[in-house]
Length: 496
Image (cartoon, rainbow, N blue to C red):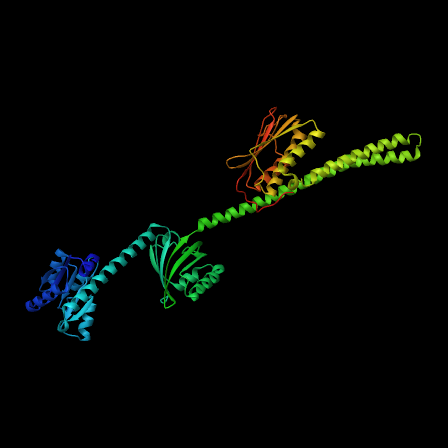
């Protein structure tokens, strides 16, 4: 049909017209005007009565119908055969009469335009034909869009909606009406009140207020919101709703949009949030447990070592004040005990004090830690760096790596009976890998309960989305591997 419109304007083509006229003279006159009106090739089919016209219509499927016969009430149903879908064809009625009854009768029967025979010219006929064909083409295009719109809506689990704001009426379509809203159909019309009443009471004020503010602005064309909506079963589902607003004279007149059921997504997010909170609680408890263990060990060291040394020193000093003969020996012993106490305190202080990573850097701090341990024990520690640069590693992650190394070396000293240990720090394709191994007695991972030290290491690693793996077997030593991804989530606790 659009091709015919184009042809009438510029390009030669063919326009098929069905003329219903029982008067031969008038029929001939109208044909002449049709040939004059159309610059493209025009084929005129004729019929003297509507019944004959129906037969011609079925066979030829004309582009447009022109008739001077205004259908009677009995003929209206037959006349609508031309104007109803699926082969609706534009109809122009030529009338000898301009009274209101004739006009209403023609339009009621489905006419697209009405012309007076007394004023009929080639120009007016051409204008009417062009108008009807364009209207037909626009109608077909609109129908195609509506059909595509409905097809998309039915092909998804969403609900497409069309809201005529002035009428406060909304047309819903889509399988989401059944699947989400639990109604037994795929399309329905609801009122604005229905929509508002079914929004969850805790969400209603917020959603309605936001929509009104968008309307008041007079220029925002998009609206979106998420809320809970009560379906037919009385259950609330989570809806992500968005629409496009059509304005007329700065007033919203219509909205088109999509309602999407996001219940599964929201519930999954809530579950992940709860799991994260639970994990956070576990991590906090692990940190507190580790801190209490550390305090307990410090207290034990102070009581069993430092306190005993100082007590012994005091006894020797007191004895020296009364035993002048052995005073030199007693004071020498007291001095030795005090010196040992100072060394014990210095060792505890180094364990508690935050390493000088800012001044020395991570690698120097690890090397210094290894040297200190080797000075006071028989454990030989080798520290290897494989293509590792700490320039792009943030301070808190450096401190976490240091504390993990410190914790594992303590475990090795206490439990492994090892003579050698190796620390490897390297970049991998996906992040940073820390490996700590020893040649100690090892243990059966399946049967031995993991201590607080290992739990503390796992907790520290998880703060940066790190993963921990421990390998060991009796008499085969053990290997601890901790991997930190390149992109880490640092919005968590910072261990000191």
